[in-house]
Length: 286
Length: 293
Image (cartoon, rainbow over all chains, first blue to last red; front, side, top):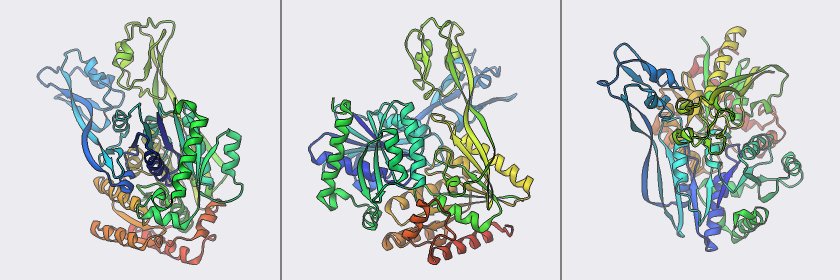
């Protein structure tokens, strides 16, 4: 099963929730895979210090034009939906960063002059963190715009027999959608501010469009009623865990420490949240 | 000359929008451009009457005509984005389709057509500090970079039209497509960070992106007293990278409270927070050689 952790707004505590949940479950003896799908800014490893045991480059296929076979007819440039090819009087120019790797130009070329080569855009790596927690991350290369192919490759490491906890990035665009697609449930980590509420709304809409059930974690929580709780009640979203607004917790996280290592009560609370997820989303344990 | 200042952070939640709002208060009148199109939040701090709002088409998607499809499966076989769902007839998953056109190229029955979709809404509203342009991506649209670019074009045009000399861009977290689109061609990037292990790690990556595109950068250390040791490391790294820290803003619960109440910083935060923000605005004026507002 795959439990995704998202939320829309950045800095609400997605990584905190993913890491502590994974640690708590692993200590219960469950098979856990923790995947860091925030490939633009992956931070899980900072809290776990894993030893990477393997890695693979991630590339996307881009056109390789054989100048000997090309008759400069221009069909490739006409079919490219991304403007990644331009045909001059002398040659075909390829704008590599614009290419989505769809293969359309290759299909369209009447001369069979377009093959493909791989262009590196990032990598994935995996290994074990102390406590034999299996973890992996994707890493987008600097200056590369398209994160989704790296996330798709990372998702290839999902083990259907294990509990896969996936830390998704902020936002509701294509990287988050790629990560979230196919998850059994999504923990939406939010905070009781108008920003948290607004971005939670967008994230829940995204999950709905992907037919993924949302449950909520309230981080930096304050006692009493607020607009986020009202929103959750109206939308029928259950808050499965509350983490209080606390300077101590902020300091702890700032140095890369984990809640479950500081106090056993946190292990219990994450496990209770997990139990509630299992009750609410039976397919999780099926 | 119209200057463009972009506020980014790498890590989310370090205070981009808060700092951008304070800068609007201190550097306005200017044009505000909320380019965090997947989670636009600036309008929450500056609610204003909508002046205009329009949809833009940023992507096209395939559509398979059920009458013409003979379920041969070539489209699904050739689609590299797993966007064609098998069945009789075959269907296109609109959240996966990247509009490349390959399905249309291979379909022997000419059952595939392409439709442009309204992928985003751009809204202009008026704030006390100048007009605010906000881009908002529709669910499942993958062209966040294109929306960012369009918001910036509109912002530039508005600045020229109103005689405003500065466009202040609130960017998104991360290092990918929308960040690159917010960054390119700017005069200066303000990178908002905080003294945490994650923020330092993310700062290093985003500064590499900034330098990759040749944009000068200034840093702002928010919540500076949260972790003195980590703060020292952030300062050390910035020094090494040749990036000056324009402000160190202390962590105060009053700031969180102001945000909970959806109030912009200046006038709602204690003097020890206001002072470095004013200093930052002055430093940015100097770096941008900007005397307007």
